Length: 178
Ligand SMILES: Cc1cc2nc3c(=O)[nH]c(=O)nc-3n(C[C@H](O)[C@H](O)[C@H](O)COP(=O)(O)O)c2cc1C
Image: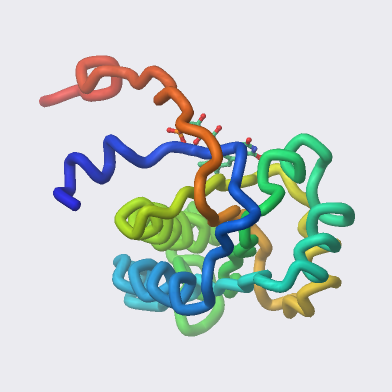
């Protein structure tokens, strides 16, 4: 798909068709796209935990997501995204390079996840990024090590709705040119 069309087309979907499941191969393509993103000194600290089995997904829905997000994501595969902490934005001696500290880890993960959701759109899949989730329950359920910071859960699936695009600002609203 042409780039501008792709970025305009992507939107958050909150109703998924459970009869059309995402495959492991499709998730691998999304993660491949994510890996192409830039990162601090090429540190590549983003990590992905894909929940494809119905049994495990049910546990995430009931134990790790608030009811409204679980309802939105039902029928989708769930991909938990984390980053290895204290690496992106840090010197070899363990000190932060500047005041942003682990903010750079979040920054890099966001770049990765941007590629991830755009690639999903390119493949005809839909996504919902969820920041409202229980990080510690996800860590426990998916055996995520303490060295990683749990960030978002991304629902990936086939859409069962065609939502309106929420209104965007204009460049003049957010850009100052000197
Ligand atoms: C970091 C982040 C966290 C979000 N968390 C949630 C969430 O927990 N639940 C939800 O329904 N949508 C969530 N969203 C989706 C946003 O509400 C959505 O991206 C925004 O309204 C713009 O709509 P669009 O994605 O369709 O363009 C999140 C989006 C981002 C980027």
